[in-house]
Length: 315
Image (cartoon, rainbow, N blue to C red):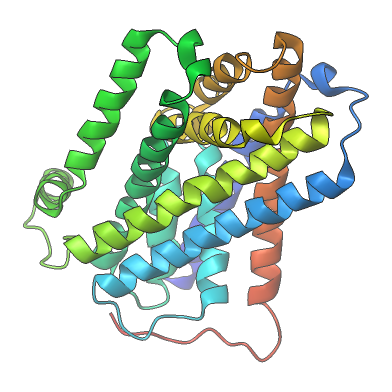
């Protein structure tokens, strides 16, 4: 690919993300949060934890690449810059941009495209599966989930079970290679496969990540709803994390628009009045999108510090 074509693709990628992000923000009902004054100390804590979770994603992605045999990895700040750009791709309907952007952008650093395809897909799938599984345990074991129909609980448990099974390297590799053969119409590359180490380590890390991500939303709730009890910590962590994971799992809609908000509203309404729950849903969507932008800005600023040239790597 020539420099011109790469520049053009980069421009189109950014334009697509910006347009999708603008549409996402335009759909927010700002009237719901008009005049809301958050507690800034709690909001600051929530924002810092949310940023930590996004950087945790970079760490997991890098860990998977190493477990798959990648050598001479680029600096963490360089991978963070790439991951932050790709993370914004979640706002593009279809979700494929979230994964494809990591493959496209990181391949220019010399990392094997086959390893990138496996690592980027596995990182996205494990993130959804691990967070869903942990969240189901936190929410499902709480008596307040009586507001959720038993049939829905059963469906969610079955969904989590199916996704865990799909993570098994033999099954995951079979699906990945079949998809590659179907689309590329040629035999899959030998590197196009995961392994147990990559699956297990990333699953454990993102299981911890469910608490990190959920904790940021708990502190956000503390900043907005005076008198929020710490007894609600695990429930709120599970409620927001489950909604976010299901939102990411739903294709076509940007960041699970509708799905995430709907799950949040149902679960939060079990512990807050509906009007407050609506405020939390709207505010959390706006806040989360702004944290994504902040992550993008910080990651790219750090990667462009002087005397920090990006290294070449071996496949």
